[in-house]
Image (cartoon, rainbow, N blue to C red; front, side):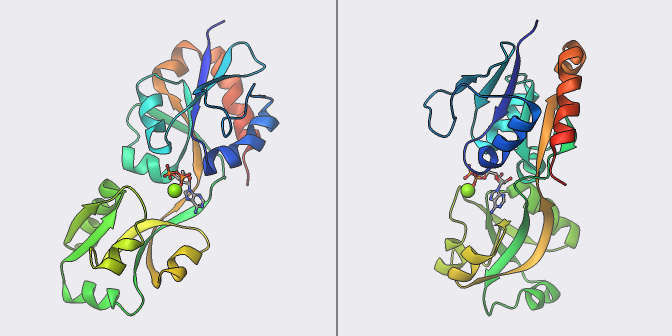
Length: 214
Ligand code: ADP
Ligand code: MG
């Protein structure tokens, strides 16, 4: 039997994926959160987990480094989704991708005036497309973390980041002003693997669909 691998990331994705794996009947031999191993076996001899950085998950699956993966819609939008099937919205790791500014910054006014906005984000492709569709000119500033700092330090007028409760924004004097997309994690599949390993992958995809959170 061919071996099947599932790419996923530690942190929020694994926290919320662990119960899904249990419902699908996959038992990891070690907890990826605590293990230093990046390839983790399961009780199924034909199946292993590959532990990757969240933003690398689509790349691993696209190029066949893993057959399946679990990735947020944020990361998939930024990657572009090339070479991937996205058959199941797992309904986990829900949040929203939002535009946020300093409290008191007149975002709608700046947009109406046709002002050029400096926007800091790690989602540069998604952000570029969002503002292009609105006809707003932006200078993008690529950051890798702690986006909230950018408006506070004068680095940017606005940020594009994920928001769930809004507590981090509020704690830093920021406010969300526009939603770009609702985010949840998806099961993704390498398109070639779906053809060559269909007999193994199809039942697994169906099991994930049944285990998804509605
Ligand atoms: P990293 O710090 O490497 O970006 P995270 O664990 O913060 O990794 O995020 C991984 C994924 O979890 C994101 O791509 C997104 O899909 C989801 N996520 C991130 N933040 C939140 C949040 N506040 N609420 C729900 N899901 C989130
Ligand atoms: Mg994070």
